[in-house]
Image 1 (cartoon, rainbow, N blue to C red):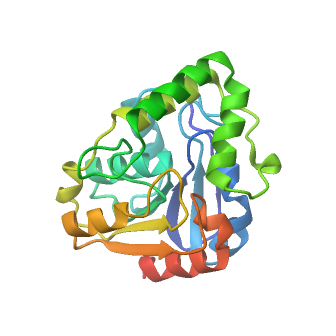
Image 2: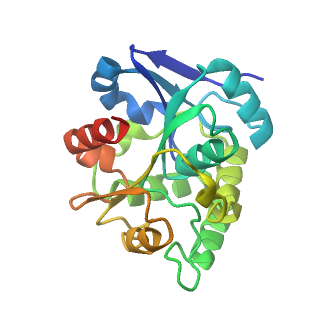
Length: 239
């Protein structure tokens, strides 16, 4: 097995993880700017793009062999869970963790904002019936009116999509997040229909030492809808 990734640029190593239903090409429009200051690693997550489906431990072991000794990691949506778990388990190698429109736990609970469990379950069933329609609808929800056509990945597999949804439902990293001693940032979109912006207030109470950013004009994809602002925020966080 091999993880599909591409690298470009020079400077502080920066690893980027995409979200559910996408592949690393979602970052393409940011790459020219990111390359100025960073050695950028764009990674296809398991079951997405050209990376085959594999479990977490295999993915982590293979990925770490392809990365430098120390690096910053940023993850969008589902990718934020991967980035956070990597930082928790391999904190000696990671300098910074930035979560973009993500959460340490995606499912709504009492006193915890998130997606209703029944909505995720219904989406899971729809995925089984019509994978392409489900993927298109979910991408439209994330982009909130932005053009999605050129961003729809060409290599999403049903097992990868299914496993990604399982991770969104099952991974709960809230308690383990307390142990991180590196700089941690969470970036939210005020108009996000997937990760409610009030997650920011709840997290500020639980994790007051983290850095928080709210993009007032963005939904679930702030790095596209407010790209210039996002790039400036990223560099400020990584200083």
